[in-house]
Image (cartoon, rainbow, N blue to C red; front, side, top):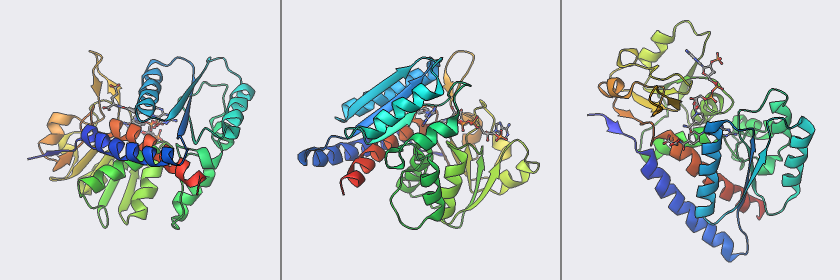
Length: 284
Ligand SMILES: NC(=O)C1=CN([C@@H]2O[C@H](COP(=O)(O)OP(=O)(O)OC[C@H]3O[C@@H](n4cnc5c(N)ncnc54)[C@H](OP(=O)(O)O)[C@@H]3O)[C@@H](O)[C@H]2O)C=CC1
Ligand SMILES: Nc1nc(=O)c2c([nH]1)NC[C@@H]1CN(c3ccc(C(=O)N[C@@H](CCC(=O)O)C(=O)O)cc3)C=[N+]21
């Protein structure tokens, strides 16, 4: 029988723990502050940013949502980020992706102060992730949430063969680093991969984050593999579906994350957790 990894429930538990930490900080006069910058009116981004702001409010954070028009100039966006960098009430800054074409994403990321980089995208934090030398640093929330899920369900990664499909800055690459740091053997698959079938068939853990509905099938994986579905897509009826054909893959996997209710809620809960991390570190 396949085990369904319940991200919604785990996220609730993580949020309860975060709420406790918020109370401890408040007793010291510190209120965690999260700023989300949303450029343009992409409908999916609007939903996610609203969810983030709502969860931050629920946990008693100070939360700011900065909405900017899709015509915003690079200078205007960077000026907003610099203001947030200088604001002592703000501990975490997240600039929602995707950004319009006139904006240089790397310039945005490099402008966010590494101490407030709650997405863990700044090259300073990416470098610390690779160095893995025991320092504190923020990590991309989705990969960190995936690692928390595996840990909570006591699914070991050390010594396991892990295949990650997708190599984005948001998902695949930071997850690769976290997995290697936990002693997994990691293979990255992307558009140019030629032997995808071979690697997938050998994997103990398969993570898919590409944005293609029902991409992964039961026949692609090894019997008993653990399958983590990061993808978020809408089907013809407008329902949320992942990158994994859930019913099909459930017949051979030993454990699987659903969409919705899997990795998504863990991403939001990890964002909250990491904002509190940043608030604690800034006051140490
Ligand atoms: N659940 C959550 O919390 C989150 C979900 N997401 C979802 O995860 C998905 C991926 O997001 P993101 O990483 O930002 O997307 P990107 O578009 O930035 O990256 C997609 C990656 O998938 C690879 N890819 C695409 N198609 C294929 C294919 N047919 N075979 C192999 N590799 C392929 C691309 O390869 P190449 O590099 O060669 O182009 C690329 O590396 C989306 O559905 C997104 O909505 C994202 C963040 C959080
Ligand atoms: N700078 C930046 N950081 C991000 O972390 C980031 C981003 N940009 N751009 C877009 C992606 C996408 N993303 C999701 C977050 C939560 C859910 C989520 O909560 N999903 C719920 C359902 C939500 C719903 O019902 O629509 C679930 O899967 O159960 C999904 C996707 C973060 N992203």
